[in-house]
Image (cartoon, rainbow, N blue to C red; front, side, top):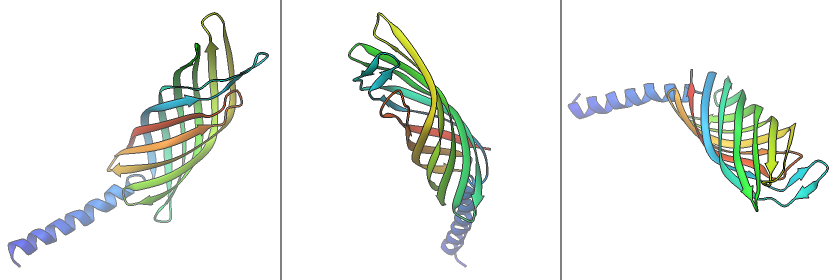
Length: 184
């Protein structure tokens, strides 16, 4: 065997050993992560005051933890819970400061280091709205859903996702984010 053949064989062996490790990183186990993105809040409804036109967005962030369970070779199921801060959205002198805790069930397809997933769950939220002279607050628990895709490199991963929160007191509450996560 010449040097070129030996080098090629060694490279193929190394790639063959590395790829299952990359793919298996999200198969099972605990993970934690943090993300940042654009949070948007649409029209708001204040108890006893009616509905107000509102279209605001701000930088939002989230912290989360979860557990993935591998099914078959490419299907994953999981659970995830976290804290989300929607920032302080402002529109026409009205400012909305909202945050909450969410919990999701996830289902995904693992294709090597790429994972595509959807999630359904609930968000327990708290929001305060102010126009400078008066403020009101509200809270509740409502449905939430999301879609995303991620790349896994060993125990480190990145993902992008869109999450929609079906909050009764506001329309179009969402977060588009990019996150980093670590699998244990």
